Image (tube, rainbow, N blue to C red; front, top):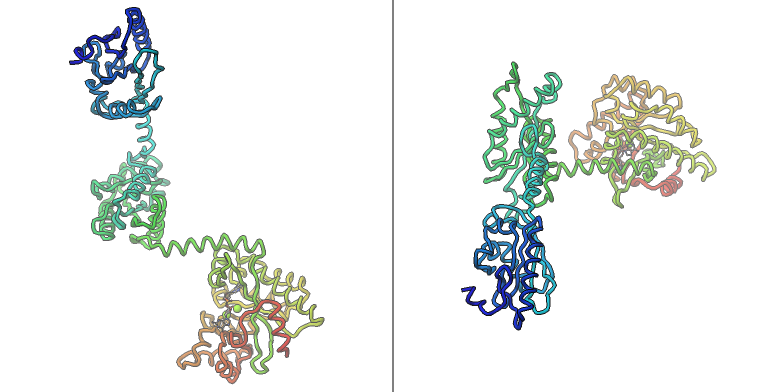
Length: 588
Ligand code: C2E
Ligand code: MG
Ligand code: MG
């Protein structure tokens, strides 16, 4: 029994046993007084506090205040004061830490705790602090508990507000991302065991516009309810933005599960929606992304699903995200950004490929071809020219190519001290014709370079002519005033009508390399090339065969009467200095 064990030792005013050998009656009066002071201090505190003495035979409560007594559902004045007999201090999160603290030398220790069992689900900041030891007294510590329940509850409800969409009551994008992140971070996560669906209500903005925001809200709520009815309880539905919903699905059998869920969603939307007096039909587009180890976070997963969703809207059926397509789009996007900077910084170069007069074998001119390196790697014109066309950058790029090609020819003349017998060919994009003042650009470039118009050939693809024949006809006749030659590039791949060919001021047909390459293997290519050559002759046009890469092809085309040849057999595209040297060696 505790009382028996402590018999013969000093007693504190509140009855706790104190290890104090050799006390005098005087010191016990002082102890009593000190005890009263301590009790008064604790009683004055607004928080739960208890003073514990650390005697050799165990820790005991010396005094406690009412706040502590209420929390602990215990009263030290009722009898046993040993800490090991007070539920809240004996075990649980507080008791375990208290035992560790007593064994340590730490001056203080503080922690947060919520223990449903011994402290009725309340939240506390608990602090243990050793008190200065008085001579002849056992060590003491003060345990205090600040009740943070109200604060924690407020934070909790604020957080749940923050994570909820106020209109539909569904989790919002934050909550959705949190959940997806938790799935990705779970050590038991298996690749392909979850999918995210992005669901977009089609025609929502029209309803909103025609019937007002209130009807729009009502529609969103009903739509959300329908979606819920198509899902399993374990799936998570969230409103991720205006009329877009995100669904996190656990997949038992992989992708087919996700596609079935998409079908169920489509099925619950087949019945019309009733809005006030009206019945309207609403459909949705669904994009799906499977969670795999390649994705780093929820944002990325949702973006992937939205990427698939975009395609789904275009194609009219549920689409699954495929990383290769997204990578291609990203590359296109970064090419656009980098190309814009490269054009502004004049980082592009022109390469010049010799055009050979097939009869004489001499150099007749050069085609200027744009060259660009991104991070030290060459990017093919076939990749960046379409990006330049889509983004409109081709206008700047085209002007730059025109100006620098003509300037190079002017420089060559100056270096040779005479007008060289070469012409220069520059490619012209259809977009330039529709967006730029080509005649102005050409006359400016010719004047700046100091060369005459008849030394410039502009190569135009067939697609340009088909797009807007009237505009092209106008632009070309304006160019003709400068005596510029016009070549039709990649001829045979488009659909130019003979009438158009006759009507436009075209001087030269460039036979596409796909036909030239196929000539030696027999088949249709040879017949097509022969037909183009006789067509050109009939129309009084010259011809260039592109892609001549062997002596056999050169011979064959020379025999057939093709005017010029271009290809690796003669030379690859060269830098300006190399091209000049090549030309001077093979002057007419
Ligand atoms: P293109 O005008 O038909 O240019 C001929 C293409 O054939 C060039 O490709 C050239 O390098 C390539 N080539 C030449 N000889 C051979 C050969 O023997 N075999 C093979 N396989 N290919 C050969 P490149 O330089 O990649 O240019 C591709 C296309 O990009 C050009 O086709 C042209 O349409 C466009 N392009 C290039 N530079 C410009 C430019 O400054 N402006 C515009 N609008 N388009 C350009
Ligand atoms: Mg060309
Ligand atoms: Mg070509």
